[in-house]
Amino acid sequence: MIGGGERVFCNPPYGKEIAKWVQKSFEESRKKNTLVVMLIPARTDTKYFHDFIYGKAEIRFIRGRLKFGNAKTAAPFPSMVVIFRNEEDSNDSNTHTGNA
Image (cartoon, rainbow, N blue to C red; front, side, top):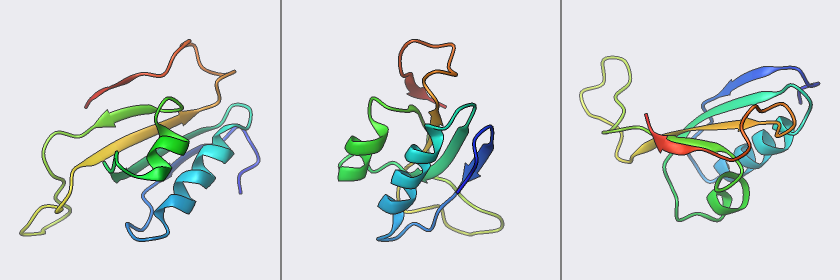
């Protein structure tokens, strides 16, 4: 749990628990002066995407598939960067979506 006024980057485990991580990140980002950035699979068909990301966060879809370190193969799924900001702290009036 963060106290507010924080900047957090989260690359959660990509399993069944990811929805809890997304929900927690969304909830924590509501605190004053708090920014949470997540690197997660681009699973736009999930309940957590529609409940906590779509229309509530900035979304940057990453072109291609991520490859970490010296891995010989890339991730088997597309990825996105999700940026949660406290609406009161944002200079923008609407959520932005786009490609990275």
